[in-house]
Image 1 (tube, one colour):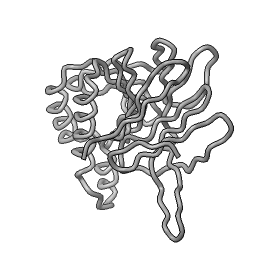
Image 2 (cartoon, one colour):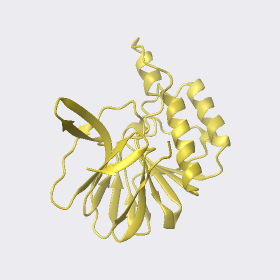
Image 3 (spheres, rainbow, N blue to C red):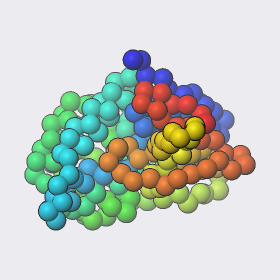
Image 4 (cartoon, rainbow, N blue to C red):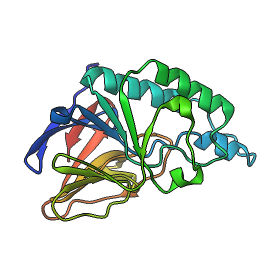
Length: 216
């Protein structure tokens, strides 16, 4: 099945909302994703909690697909790239280094609260690190959703999901929550909880349903 991305204008600028859980800004050649939480299963396993180990492979496969289909020149990681210091095991470091070697793109991390558990990220990941935010064109990219005058803010942190119901059927789907001055990206990792969001005046919600992004 072909993926279906959603094209919208934000702050007068065309962007694309991707079913891979990322934002693509064509004019800047930028793909932005948030809340990957790499190493989360490994973190939990250290406490004897058995969790699936295929999460990282799913993340990397979707990230590769998003880079390939958009042709993005830059990848912005909008906070919480890692889950904890303990989850960045040698195996995780090596697997991500292998993936990184296959992708000749500039990668910039804007640190989130989880990223501060590790003062220095592995050199083999080849990351440029910004501590607070990154300003690009009309946009500011920052992990925490704290709007700033003069720029449209794209943030993460909240892991937004939307609840849909029809009769006895109930769904909670990851979503993009887009307001007049602030847009919240979905958590890139599927292995996260989520904050239920609802649409208020001036806001739009775009749900991710498998290979499709649709406004609800």
